[in-house]
Image (cartoon, rainbow, N blue to C red):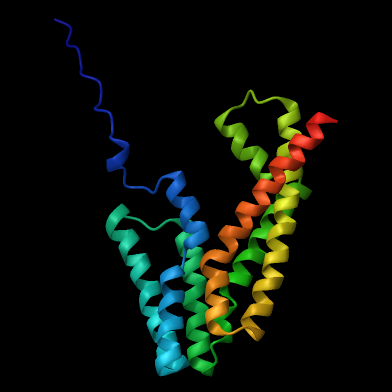
Length: 204
């Protein structure tokens, strides 16, 4: 008698132990936000050392939360919060919060190098990612994604310069706003500009 094996049960995406692509994207933009808020609030009332300690505690807390929820920590969280913790410890050692404040600038400069490198090697990151999802995309779209990768690299470079200036010369509150929502808002504005640029280019 031939036995018929039951197919393996379908895994419910809601029960997955790994962050969704949307969750990873949010981690990229909002990663390290709670430590920044903690640093800003505590630093204003109790000074930079107390603010740095609070920021470090919340940075570790974000990693522990993701580990408890997903049984692992995403690479984005390791990079963002790991860099935040490393620079926070340096700031604590030198009693100078400037190192902690440089985390957004370093992250954004890293994105610039990564995107520009992928474009220079003729393997634009955005093009490769979209091709993995849909290998049959038209060539004209592939060319557009290559250009977007380059322009997005320049966007991150510009934002890294602004973030560096903010770390040195802006108030802690203004720097925190730039870190918290500045990148997200400016990215939305940039993407809207990209849509108009591509549409105008197609109409020529």
